[in-house]
Image 1 (cartoon, rainbow, N blue to C red):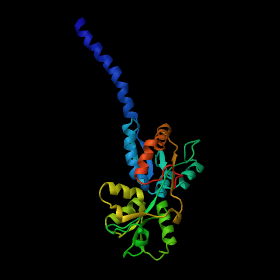
Image 2: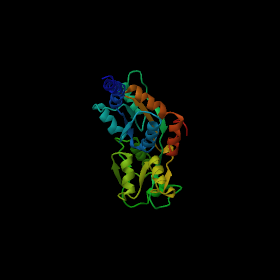
Image 3: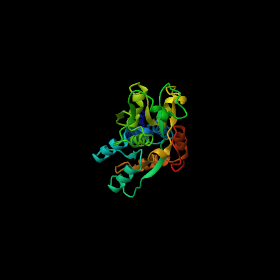
Image 4: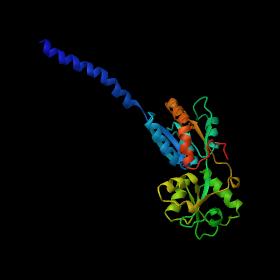
Length: 260
């Protein structure tokens, strides 16, 4: 009788030890981050590195800065907002959509670039845009800071009569050019760097636009109200750290954000 009872005791102990561990893992929700399309190439790599280092799982929602903010206003359950400007993260603080006591912070400065595939337009691809037949791809200036920058540069170069095709965000503007639906366009340098690494973009076919022709592309972040504040703050700390800075630099961003 004693020999039969002993295995039952051991089984009972195993269940007590293993049960809570399974429950805790199941309750661990992913960190939901709303990220502007311009920052998405860098954020996908940063998020994977963060997870590999033992951080929370990250789910990215990519879109224009404006459309993402509208989703936040309408109650989308994002934990962290990474915009392509500072205005909307600051607005989130003023409208009390940010976590209490939180301020908006700059994480990088974006770069606008002119791109014409198979043109070898360097060093001034911006000037070459005016020679193209067809509409130039730009992001929607109502929703996307890169669209605001694109329109400003077209005006600065007196390209006011150039027809354009307006994309909902700068990532889609890139796709319009990549697919041949537009002969060229003004897009984020980060997307071109990603395409160059993948062998889909040639370095000779794009050039950076002078930053003095458009408003600043200082990109800001803010932790939003919600149950995962500590996790969001942890990721933001990582985002501002040396590992992430290397990634941002790799994709053409200026870091620290106040660098020229």
